[in-house]
Amino acid sequence: MKHRYLPMTAQDRVEMMEAVGIQSIDELFSDIPEAVRYQGTMPMSEPLDEYALLRHMKGLADRNADFDSHASFLGAGLYDHHIPVVINHVISRSEFYTAYTPYQPEISQGELQAIFEFQSYICELTGMKVANASMYDGATALSEAAVLAAGATKRKKLIVSCTVHPEARQVLRTSANAWGLEVVEIDYRDGVTDQAKLAEAIDSDTAAVLMQSPNFFGSIEDLSTVEPLIHAVKGLFVVSANPIALGVLETPGKLGADIVVGDAQPLGIPASLGGPTCGFFAVAEHLMRKMPGRIVGQTVDRNGKRGFVLTLQAREQHIRREKATSNICSNQALLALCASVYLSIMGKEGMREVGELNIRKSHYTANKLSALTGAELTFSSPFFNEFVLKLPEGSSVSAINSKLLKEGYLGGYDLGRDYPELAGHMLVAVTEKRSKNEIDQFASALEGCL
Image (cartoon, rainbow, N blue to C red; front, side, top):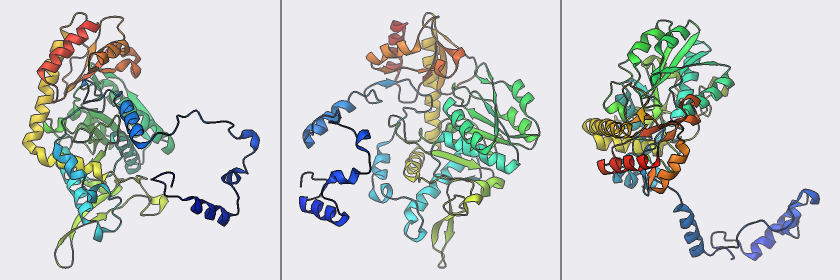
């Protein structure tokens, strides 16, 4: 054998070629004209032995700037939150990480119960009646909510705030285009949705208003004033929420939301240099039968023993394609399990405590950074754990972040990438992991870069 992981002997190769009637491997490509075949040797390194390959790959990995090597003040959707060590222990059990879609409930009770617990936690966290599982992430959950709203109201107009995450709005526009839906974006004022413009845009053709709170700028939206506006025209109110913030803020359900979505990444899921994450999706009871994804229900068998089953299956794999409400096919249950373990460990008091730490530390940081010469807070609206910092005139956020990287810091997000009017503005995120010493040193490093 030439390769230990490809157990193919020379005799095996000969027998396979004889079976398909060829004398050499090159004959497999005889249908490809000689003129378009690659001539020469691919520009690749020579083969490496296992030890050399591992050293090479570790060298490449060590070039990454991650949460272990740098203090992160970068958020914008993925956050450096504390991940209790017990989470990795639980999800590393083979019965969880090898499990996929629980098509056969009689042999998937553990997997189904894990999903059911996740749904229950999400309902309690959001203040909603029903939750599902297996949404890919927060962005796709928001677009699925928009499609649900359009189908439920039989309307084509969606109103979304510009303070919703830019990537989520991109996903929304892609989905809306496929469904023939109109997307109207509402501008912001002082870091939150312009309520006057929102009220003016809502009419009898509006299927839903979609908002995020805390929004992309970290500011907390006044959801209670939006709810009567959209419900007056019998539209739906969709809210994208940060699950950590829900430990200290009023639940969207109590503020009148019909659909609450979000990304569960802050709940014990590693950022992993960009993903994967896990979305959550919860609705008011009257929308239960229109939900996408999977819904696990609790039942009893004929002997009265508790059991779990997939119920209200609206995916195209389960019912006629033309009747399906969603094409969510991947099972995100392992990441949902991360969130469930995190929430069970933290409990109500723990969630409140970590939320309060995010608030206090981010406000301390905001005060430190806004005191730097030429820097100031852009918005005066209340914020959770992110805020927008205006840098001195002519500053390049990209150039400053490059300097901060060399100092051992992941700087804030360059808002000029998505909001041209906010060029020279940095979105700074501060989680419970940042110590006072780290914050003070970051302020000093930033001052040296200005």
